[in-house]
Length: 67
Image 1 (cartoon, rainbow, N blue to C red):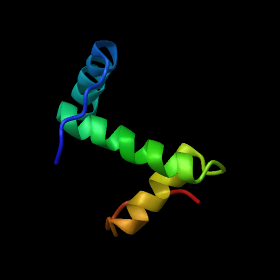
Image 2 (image 1 turned 90 degrees about the vertical axis):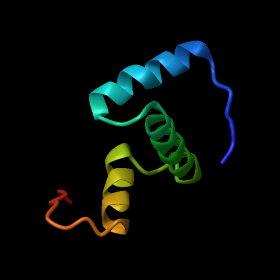
Image 3 (image 1 turned 135 degrees about the vertical axis):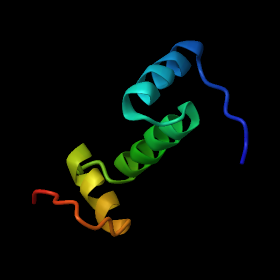
């Protein structure tokens, strides 16, 4: 675990998004970083593709993801 310095405006965006998504600010930032890393490594995937892959990888039961 480490410390990441981010711009104050980005921190505020993460704070607001975390409230909507019921995540901590750190969890929201981690989510954005993970999705961004996957998107950067797989530029042809859409956000929906990335989320579908993550749901499948987590073996979330009872969740229907449209193909």
